[in-house]
Image (cartoon, rainbow, N blue to C red; front, side):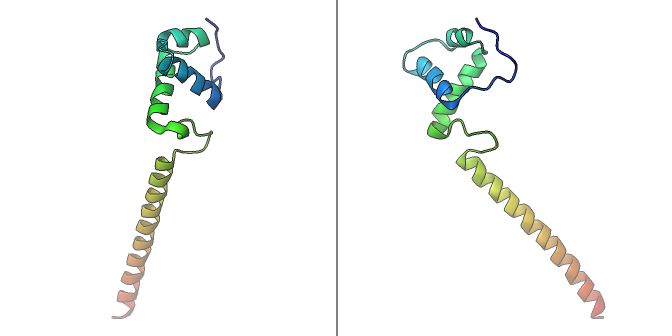
Length: 100
């Protein structure tokens, strides 16, 4: 077993090859993990990511999966609209006072 430095980053292609060893060649995640010096959980996460997201399984750093990106955009839009509503409510109360 090799010992890797904490935070070692693997390329997408490498992760896909490790997943292929498990899914297509039937190797045990624990065996593959020991061979490459990561935890069994890491290999299992890679397998799950491929099963769940396919080609989008490993977005580059700072990027999100398409679904996560859409959710993020919707949450931002909701927050912006809530802020706009709060501003309009304050303006309405100011104008209502001035009209009396």
